[in-house]
Amino acid sequence: MGETGSSEGELLSGEELEGDVLVESLQKEVENKLQILAQVSPYTKITRIISTEEWKTTKKNRHLGYTGRSDRSCHCKDEMA
Figure 1 (tube, rainbow, N blue to C red):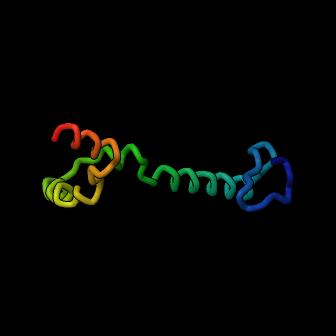
Figure 2: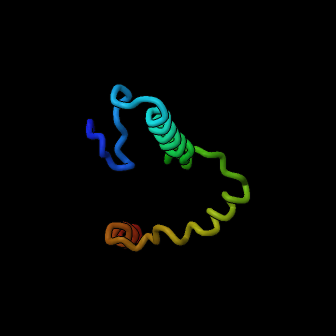
C-alpha cells in the first residue's frame, strides 16, 4: 500500500486520500464488505431448517451414499453368518 498508482483492488489508507477519492475508496470498501456479508456461510447452510418434503427426498436418496461394501463391513458380515 502507500502507492498513489495502486490497482483497483488495492485500497489506500484514509490518511493518504482526500475529497472525492476518499469517498470513492470508502464506498468500494463498503461494497466489498457488503458482498462478503451477503454470502451464505457454511454454518448457515448446515443449520438451516429442513422441511418434511426435503427429509423425505433425502431418505429416498440415501442409498446413493455408503453401500456397506467395504472390506471391514464384509468381514463383519461374514463373521456374523
